[in-house]
Length: 486
Image (cartoon, rainbow, N blue to C red; front, side, top):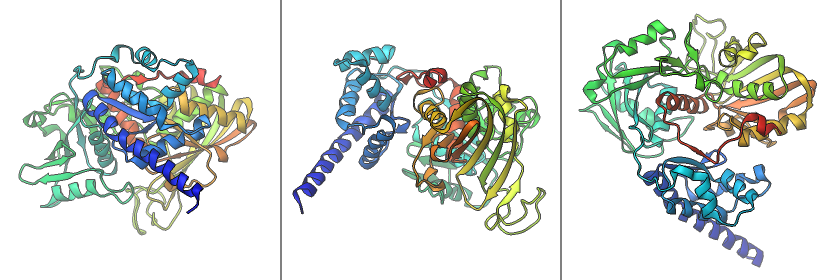
């Protein structure tokens, strides 16, 4: 082995050792202080040393240089020493701000950034809000994973409600939570108590309730009160149907994981979540496609103005399609989903206007279902008010994804090798593929990837947080989209 090889291995081992030392510190901050740490949106909680190193390395694509563990470790130690209370801290953004400040006093900088959260470790915020999942399909199980991952802070998963499918129903439900063909194994431990109909997942005790009628469930019998019921069945989509949940004991509000009908508010977090009021007993989280495209469209409309556009969705097949040719009430959807590209309709383009009224009547849309199980793409073909080029448009969207209000919704990538499976598990609503962008004058075509299951589920949880009023303080503070455009 050459000297250079030896030095490279030693350097890697040293970095790996430092990342390993970070793991218990990150864990203590989360468990004892409710401090959620991330690097440019990539969470560090429950991550391996390798994943922590990867999160640091990704920063080279953002700031031009890899984030050093020698920079983040002192920050974590100082944050713990300050007895910081519940807060979401992005170490990548925080380090960049500290570097740009020119300060050499890290403690003084952190005290200013953390403000009232200093010496608030263990301070009791509002009691966690009880959450009930009505239905336990693809979205329901991913919502459960995300809520369990949070360990009960702010939102506490208390129950799932399903129709009993077999004598060993609860065992099968737990098995589907434990193993997922697309999203991989559950990260943790799951125990089933068949006698008491409970699933214990990483310390979260989940009551399994069997019912065919949402109005007859007595949640208070299980100690559940003022719960937010998340209906992910899609069975009811109007106020009348969803109101059945509100007649059940222990329920205060309802969220639908699909586009609602009538006058129900369709919420895309990051866009119009501020429209939710205490009087809104039923709201909807719109569709996965609407969540993916609306933030990008808002960003583009704010900067360049959208005159009109067409949205073409290349969407993974869904459970309502047939595996083999058979009768289906929808046009073309009866043909085999596993063998065909299927042209179908989408209401996503029109639904954008419900969250973003300034685009009313400006968009058309269509969809093609393709033989993949997850991750879709939306192609935005837009006519703009202000002329631009590929570089300017991409730079703007890249900056928006990093430091603007929509950073939780929009991600950006410019790798020449990425394909759909690379975005499985993305927590953003949509990911702009910069290399695919076409922009000439006032015409632009923007490609947006999205994990139509997990990315959407993350958006749903953000809406639940808004309804419950449990959003943690974000540090450093995020600039507005307009500021990011400068």
